Length: 295
Image (cartoon, rainbow, N blue to C red; front, side, top):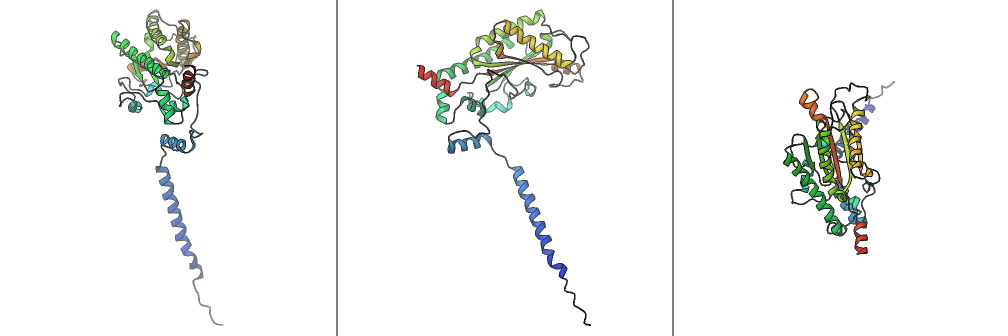
């Protein structure tokens, strides 16, 4: 019987291995390209508005801060260099010498075109709010410099918020949430400045912080409870002095948002603090158009 020739039939599919490797490499290449890419949200919003006349649905979110105070999206003071005059990521709003509304502010205003934005920015009500809010920031800075308390009370701001940080030793004794007699003069001064600009303020968040040393008394279960009671006592005092209660929000973070190390006494002192976030009131397009109609 004649022997069959071996034709190497099994090697005919080797090209598929090479093809599969090439497809895999191409897939990895495009995955890397996608991971390196990013979309500028502001440009994307402008493109969508130019075609549709309205912001994209996934970014058009309006928060009514007046009815439900929530300052979670405001940059925490822990990220602010207390020695700086301007927040790094907000510096663009100051380079031109004037403050421009942020993208989120524009959405909250209800503007969808540049003409709408110009109408709001040129309105008397917007200019009044902006002037009053700027004046509050300047007055707080002047207060700190006049009394030489830069090491105990820090002031900074972004385009739509003013930030204050007060060392807790100015307001409370160690382990206590009761306001000291010395703290009343400071709170009265701050309250007086706040009231003068009350029409330009949407809400005031008061945030209590402690160091990491466990609380050792029967009054409080832990540092979070201590910091919460301190923040709320400041809010209650402001309420008694005439600031509307629905503008005040007290929050206690305990030792969980430190701005310094807890391994040194100086670091612990820096972490024991009360912070204030004052949110500027947003002037809406409908508000401006209503004012013009009334006029």
